[in-house]
Length: 474
Image 1 (cartoon, helix red, strand yellow):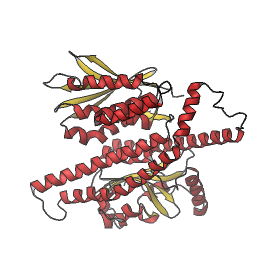
Image 2 (cartoon, rainbow, N blue to C red; image 1 turned 60 degrees about the horizontal axis):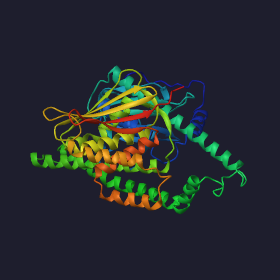
Image 3 (cartoon, rainbow, N blue to C red; image 1 turned 90 degrees about the horizontal axis):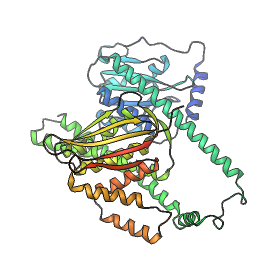
């Protein structure tokens, strides 16, 4: 073990401690059964960096340890208790020892540890090594744990422990900040609603023609049906995810030869099934993110580590790039990497413009993403390199890309008729997938106050450039 087990509270009853903890859980809105993107990123990043098959972020709620996010639960079996219920008794978890001591806990070999060898996670799921970090709020309350598990013996290094510690602190701070921002926004909305009177409300009769037209468009296109459709779509995606998780998990188990030896051809097919399942999961996640953006077009500025987020985007597109025999490489300018951005809109902007490039990149290409800050802007250059063909985006699609970008920025919705908008939307049906993704990237970057351009020459090749305004961190 990294440290001996100890209890942080010395002169406090368990009842007082439990009540205070439940109040904090309530205030942080962690009893709600909803996905939390920040926690999902924390578990996925932790598992990928430490190369562990399983990562969990959970909180203590009454007598249960509730999983708020997990990565790799199917590696415990496709019908395991944790996967079905997303919770475990506190006394059956490793996390309770981390939470009570408020210190990291590392176990290199549970089978040889006299205290942990009888734990149900060890006996039932054959967990051999463990690393857990406490989740501590800004008020100093320990509410849960970020932890990774492995099925083999391993000695966690100081670097790995520090990384998990930083990830736990980052995700907790980000989540608290988002909760606080939502409460402030809600209070402002309530105040405005309470003070707004008919005399103060905007009259469309006295407004300018452009504003009157905007109000008219809203009245003709009520948001309720669209929002309802988005909600239903999210629920359907959740239902799809359940059998999909089983497919990915079972293919992974079969590949390992758990139920018998598989030949080379079967192994190849299982690899295709597994990779395809993971790619579908990524696409489903993107659909859910699209719904969130559609529901909230306003900027939600948060501190974002560009380097970490960039790596996550590349990881999510790795299968698509490899299928085209291409490589994705990220370069981030040395120095400050934490900036105020709308995390989801930035993530989707880069994701979809890279999707556009991947769709038409020639086999053997190296797609490079260069991120640099040139205050007051963040600049992203996306280049395509090839070892023996000419560099740059494929010449066959340059004219189409230039036309699409120009067409998007020339369209001013306030000064065109409904017939022109309808005609433009109908023309989108003729566009290929990569043209739609390029258009959507332009739209997202536009929402952030930035712009996408295609720069270069036929001789030297073309590249995409994204310029985004940066807000200073106070």
